[in-house]
Image 1: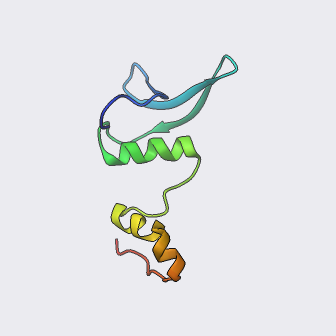
Image 2: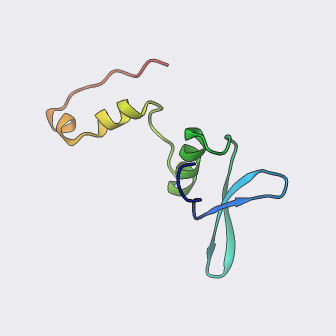
Image 3: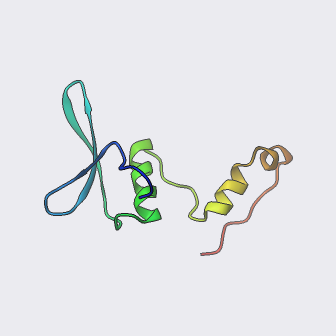
Length: 83
């Protein structure tokens, strides 16, 4: 976790991290984060819970390349990234 603490994080006294927010005066539980605090996996899980979407790829460089507008316009087809 880089920089300031994320807005919707809450830490249970036992040490588990949860994502939750208040809507119309009621606390809504969005999900639990299982990764270690301060890692890229922690950030990824946080944003997946907030957005409601799973990350399509695990390699940041590959994701950025695929999202590049120029590459989409050309219609390039990309093979799956090796694990």
